[in-house]
Image (tube, rainbow, N blue to C red; front, side, top):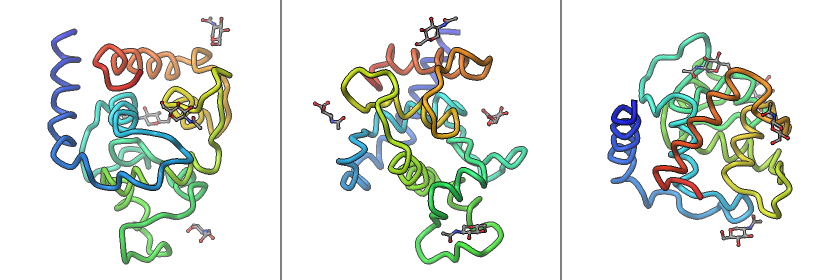
Length: 159
Ligand SMILES: *[C@@H]1O[C@H](CO)[C@@H](O)[C@H](O)[C@H]1NC(C)=O
Ligand SMILES: *[C@@H]1O[C@H](CO)[C@@H](O)[C@H](O)[C@H]1NC(C)=O
Ligand SMILES: *[C@@H]1O[C@H](CO)[C@@H](O)[C@H](O)[C@H]1NC(C)=O
Ligand SMILES: *[C@@H]1O[C@H](CO)[C@@H](O)[C@H](O)[C@H]1NC(C)=O
């Protein structure tokens, strides 16, 4: 199991490492980091990069259409948000999907655990529970996500 986790984290580092510097700006209000996005894709899908959606959840962050709408209908550059698959094509793209999440987090950003800062843990909570801060340990999937978040911590992806 540990080897699996290490392999999975290593592969996501390799996948994203070379693109590390793209889009560094614009996050001062979210105060997030690349480590956080790498962690969140690990949490939701083990950073599966695929152009397929399953059950209308798409991409490395497992994004749904309703989430995409709440986040502000963000698309790949030049795409038309009214095109049927525009949301899927963005959600399936590791970087465009991050823009969707930034839109969502910008809207719902708050300090869920009252520790005086808005960090990756808060993003996980906001993102996982429809924009509110309900504790993650109340559901089975929430507990799975918390466990994987712990793996990110152990791997040094997040504080
Ligand atoms: C994506 O999210 C849905 C709804 O929370 C969940 O049922 C599904 O298992 C998730 N898929 C993955 C790959 O985590
Ligand atoms: C976003 O897309 C949905 C569904 O296609 C549409 O109903 C909605 O009006 C769009 N919102 C904006 C702000 O364009
Ligand atoms: C942003 O991160 C810095 C360094 O980790 C921290 O000192 C600061 O409080 C954070 N700001 C917000 C608004 O969370
Ligand atoms: C769930 O998390 C909350 C807040 O972090 C905590 O107060 C509570 O004790 C936890 N419950 C369980 C069953 O772990």
